[in-house]
Image (tube, rainbow, N blue to C red; front, side, top):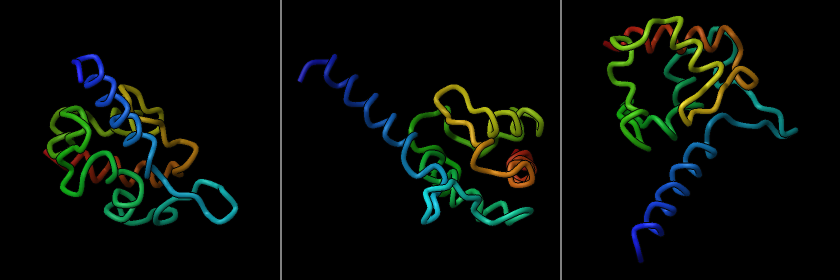
Length: 113
C-alpha cells in the first residue's frame, strides 16, 4: 500500500468517526438531546461527544479533539460557538442539542483547565 492509500484510509476513518455516534435519534428519526433541558453535563458528553473526544476527554481522532484542558484555551462563549456551529472537522450541534444543553456542556468544559 502506498502513502496515498494510507492517507486516504486515515481520512476515511476520521470522517467515519466524526459522522458516527454524534447525537442520537429517537424511533421517529429525530435528533434528541442526551439528558433533556438543563441535564447533566457528563451524560450529555457521553451521549453526544464521547465517540470523537474519548471517555477521558483525551481525543480519539487527532490532537485537535483533546478536550482535557479546553477551558484554558477557549472561553465559555468560544466553547458554546464551537459546539453549536462546529468547525475544523466537528459537526455543529445546534439542531440536535438545546441551547440549555449546549450551555451546560460549555460550563462543564470551560472548567477543564
